[in-house]
Amino acid sequence: MKILFVAGGSSGVVFSLIPLAQSAKNAGHEVVMAAPEDCIRIINGAGVPGFAVTSKVMKDFLYDRRGVLQEIPEDLHERYLFNGRCFGRYAAACVDGLTSLIDRWQPDLVVGGVLAFAAPLVAAYAGVPYVKHAVDMGEPRTIDLAAAAELGPELEAFGLYEMPSADLFVDTCPPSLRTADAPAAQLMRYVPYTSQRPLAPWMFDKGDRPRVLVSAGSRVTKDSDFEILSGLVTKVASLDVELLVAAPDTVVDELGTLPDNVRAGWIPLDVVARTCDLVVSHAGGNTVLGSMAAGVPQILIPYLPYVVGYTERLSAYGASRMVRPEDDSPENIADACQEVLATPEYRERARAISAEMAELPLPADVVGVLEGLVA
Image (tube, rainbow, N blue to C red; front, side, top):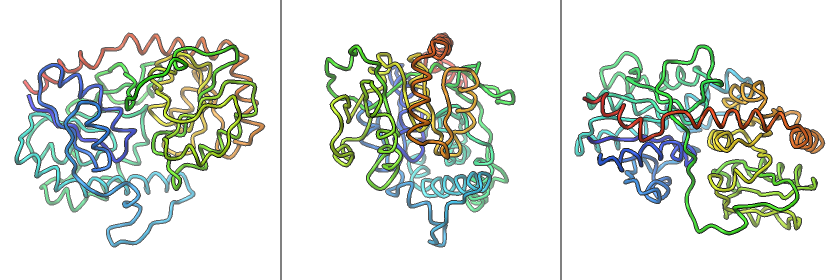
């Protein structure tokens, strides 16, 4: 069986798809993952063949099709529409590269991340089943509607009147945290993945002080999200903790001189998370799910609007505490950290979620479901 995986526009969503792609490859199937050119190194590093479908990056799609830079709205609903339009333009830029690959390779199945809106289009073009793959714990459906509106010309070119629906939805959100109106899904255990490097002894155990990890995601650069990362570091570094700052090497020097209790740089969450007492982050999908899988309580500051929903659900469950972006003062962040570290119930609830996730089918089991879908 030939399976085409279609990733979104950044490394974070690539990480989400890799465990199932690796499992399919290990089961003897031919696998190709299509993504932007700047993500191919990450895909190849996971042992998965990568195919570049565009040389553009997500920032390019802040411009509309006329080349006019679009302002990011303040209103939450308008922001969802804005995000959907951007993802729609990204999908449109991938269509030619994807159809070219399909014409040459002829896959039997297309698996696309939830924000990779080109995937259902090219699955219809190829006449094969389409599988939608979660990349976090759910996005507002307004984003889907706005992406579909942006893709009107492409839908028309394919002879379609609406976005094709998925033949299967693979969801890694544990049942206790799914919304009441969540679509039917093939549930799958979330398996944390990160780009690999040699490990160090300190990653496996901690000292006497609480170990706190801070992350603003894998996409941080000097020009994007750096203020979020540096702000979180400043707000947590004053606590009497061992502080780990997960950050790309390219921005570590920009953090300046750090206190002796701080380590910054590449930190493998899949290894280190279980040694942590608390994770403080921007509520990015892989950071949240990876911490949940490890049973670690979290402080979540949802700077991106589309992560607010699942941040609220995880906080209501009792496994995390949410601090709204407008309330993220150093005092409030420090108080939230101290509360979670001092309250055993947060860790108990986090471990309950981890146990629930561990009972879900592994990616290797879901490969059999994909085989049945094609058969």
